Image (tube, rainbow, N blue to C red; front, side, top):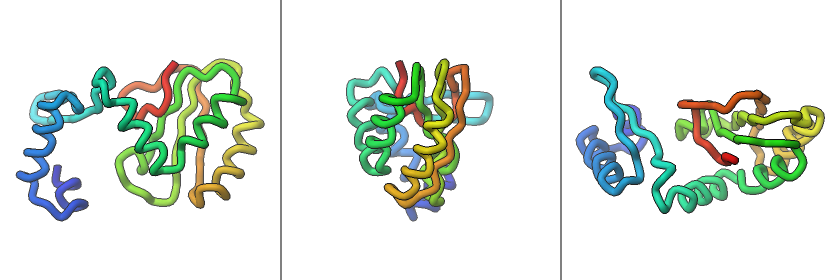
Length: 141
């Protein structure tokens, strides 16, 4: 909460109120683990996909997803990880692609091409198992 408060120039109390409003509206899911509270997007919320689309378009990732999914093989999941998933635009976008028989040669080519298109460094990680509790899910089969 302190990080959000600093980033937005607001008090932690204001941030807490907004998180409570978003939780009350069902957009966020609150989880308590001992003395630590975490929030996660509620993927079952009717507006989840609309909000997800807005974020994709803002980051220029809508084109990225379309290209990955059309040429990458059997993609099960695409997850935005790293700083950008935490709301920090450091100039690098980390993307985890999960699936079978992924075309790693194409993804290397795509990384270079996307860097020129969106003026950010794009780093891909290819995995076989779905990613859980890490990052922002951009696509899920």
